[in-house]
Length: 166
Image (cartoon, rainbow, N blue to C red; front, top):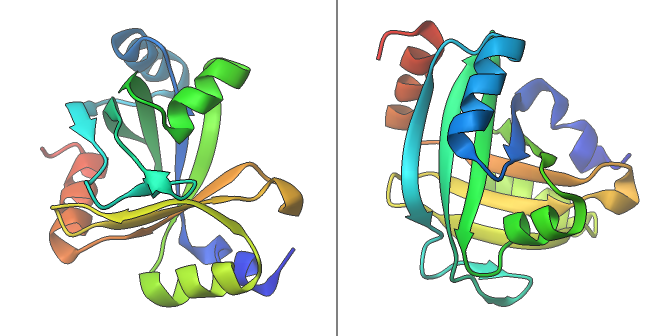
C-alpha cells in the first residue's frame, strides 16, 4: 500500500454499487442493510469538462444516496453513454463498484495519489461545488477509489440525510 493510499483510511465515507434497477436496489438496501431513507437524483450527467480515460465523458446516470449507520451508500444506475459505470456493469454485472473518501484537502490528496502512479479514471467539479476523482487501484489490491471534496453546504445536507431529518 502506498503512503497516499494509507492516509485515506480516516476519511472513509462511502460504498457505491452499480445497479440495473434503482428502485429495486433501494428496496433491497432498505431491507438488508437497514438504510432508512434514500434521496434520488434522476438523469444526472458528468460535467462537460469531465474526461473518462482521457476522453470527454458524455454519459448520464441516476443515483440514490442513503446511510447505513455512519456509512454513506450510493446506488448508481447508468443510463446513457460510455462511463466507468457502464464498463463495470458490462464486464461484471451489478455490484460493489467503489469506495469513497471525503477528504479535507481534495487537491493535495489527488496530487498525492497521482504521484504514487495511480491511474486517474475521471475527475471533475460539480455545480454543487463538490470535487471528485476516481482512481483505478487494482494494482494496489482494490478496485476503484473515489476522492471527494465537499463544500460545507453539501456536508450539512449529508449530515441531515444521515440523521433522517430531511
